[in-house]
Amino acid sequence: LTNVNKPTFLLGNIDADARYVTVEVQHGGTKEVLTATKDATGNWSVTPTGTWADGDYTLTVRVEDEAGNEKHSASLTVTVDTQITIDVIELVNDNGIPGDNMTNDAHPQFRVTVPGDVNEVSLSIDGGVTWVKATQSATPGVWNYTWPGTVPDGDYTLNVKATDNAGNTVTETLHFTIDTTLSTPVIVLDSADDSGVHGDNMTNHTQPTFALQHIDDDAVRVTVSVEHGGVTTTFDATKDAGGWTFTPTGAWADGDYTLSVSVEDKAGNTSHSASLTVTVDTQIAINNIELVNDSGIPDDNLTNNVRPHFQVTVPTDV
Image (tube, rainbow, N blue to C red; front, side, top):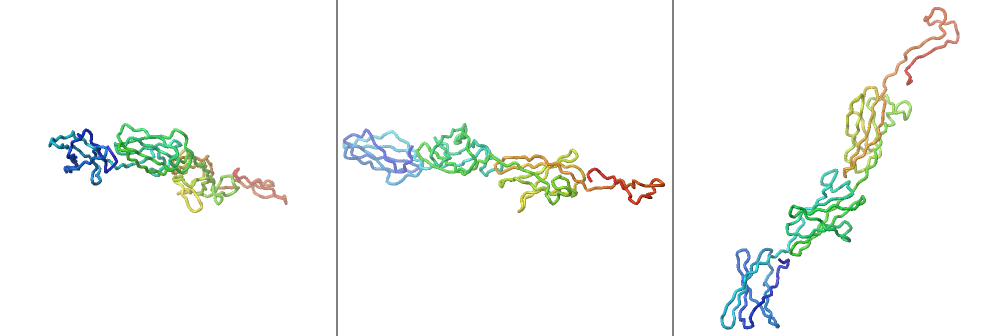
């Protein structure tokens, strides 16, 4: 086996009185006869006149001496292999969006698929300063490696080097990102919908808008869960130039609503906000107006007091 496409062969046991030494080469159904040469020290060798394509070559030596005796060697089959490829490099624990080569696992796991004659696969994430050897799986041509130490968050270039039985070597790269962190989101009632006392999380708007804060730029999904009357419904938030927001699609009835935000980023990290309870109150009433110093006939709203005294009964949130 050789990765040299014009290999030289040494011919041994050639008698000193040899007159003709030739080598017959068979390859792919064709035959070629090469003439061997003898150097100054009496050693015979033969080299193809041109380069050989990859494949198997069967060689037989024919020797004829001065007396006309002829002898043939046993055949020798040689494989020329000058090619090697790395077919696939995969980040196995690619979380979040499939195929984006991002993971939230600080121990990235790689799978390398190569031809079956590859005998070594090495990996490096520091520009080739240090290399680690992958392990061959039970499946021919598939090699695996999981980084044992914690790899910090960041962008990396994985270098993969493969070597086959013929000594060919090839290197390919894979760019990947480790992202294990995600900010904790916050949901607040938009100030424009916070009617009445500011910051009391009460509104008289039936379709209030909520601002979603601390949403990382690499967020791919932001949802808002709303619980009301024992029923929880989840909605997709929307993003515009001003950031992420949520507005109910329909009018809310009066009552309490508890909201929370969930975020997922490209690497598959998830984070959840603390809950926010908001009260929708669109109703108000004056229950009773009473003239306290009503003199004379009760409840005729007549008084002889020039300083009338009134008592008004309303809901406690007035």
